[in-house]
Length: 498
Image 1 (cartoon, rainbow, N blue to C red):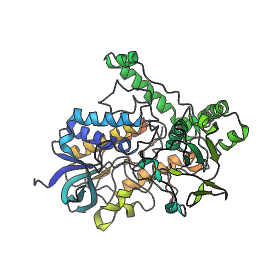
Image 2: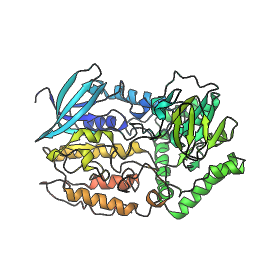
Image 3: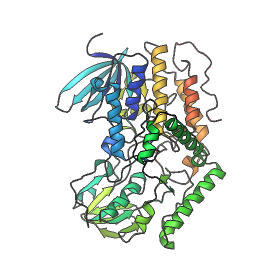
Image 4: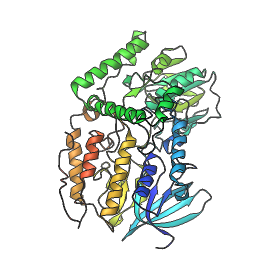
């Protein structure tokens, strides 16, 4: 095989890409490459370094199966610590020689029996690489979504997205406009208050916020985790079970959702004394419709004299003035956008061209689809991790990426050569997800969320089941999803959710 042709190329070196690389090594693949646009591995944990950034999944569950970390500093690890963890995993696995850092895939085109990739390095060089198999592990929280606000570019002071945090800006005593009340804003606001900022918080809609109840691990606890006597394994298993149990409340079970919502309402009542402010912070949509957030510090920060809650979306900018949708105007010095990411419309989809000269973006024009959330009809030998319906709202998405990596590895070994997904298999999987999602709060909960495709109204990001459901479905796949391969026991229309 020529030097410019590789059996497997992985795009992205976050959790999913690293999980895929580890799975390939364990299954005997000795030739693969990881393309990473950043200057280090880590994905979202490299790119997001705003004050207060941390995981909202328990640390011991937000780790790769073969790399448990007994030394997490706290129950919910800070972002920088997760970034260090991923770099350590790469070192321990010897993946450094497989990495091409500061290299961007600018095009990928299917050519009869391989993918032709165009790569751009940071020093301006352009190169070509052929891949028998292409794995997109590009992540879904990578490209900041800026609001379409008239006059944004005219803002007189510094402005930036949380994922592009500018540490050069001194926020002490600064008037900061913070737009958004999602996961990033909930973590950031208390840090801004601690730093002495005066904050205008623009809230389009209130979120459901549960107690976080996190704490640091003591040196004694960390020694127990490292002792090798099963404490770490039992902790991880307990956290997994607790996470799976949350699926009921997030997916609309009336009893579980009602109980969880009451916990959230009591959390708000206990932390915000002012009735008017409480009312403004009370969600008007069903529990689980949006991502449920965890914080013990957000409500006290909002209730402090350093924050003014603006219960309205940002509608315009006029130099130093922010104009809310209700017409009110307020001045600020720094503007911070905690406005999320392009999730349902993945930027890489424009770059990938499959059979019949059709791009992945065209194929996904009505929303992302894939069989097993991983393989796509019209795109032979292409695998997508963290793509269609592979996210979770109740548990660790790392476990989902590992399940997908296992499916990819099994497929590569059992079915070598060119594999084409049957459109009927992908369609059946997509219909099944639609049926499972139809009565959930994600679609009927009365909110806008990043789980649902804006054009089609379909649930395209979340998996509408548990991790165990996903595991069983991917384990059962027998190749009947592909053309011209033996059909076996797997039925793509089998029940997705017990």
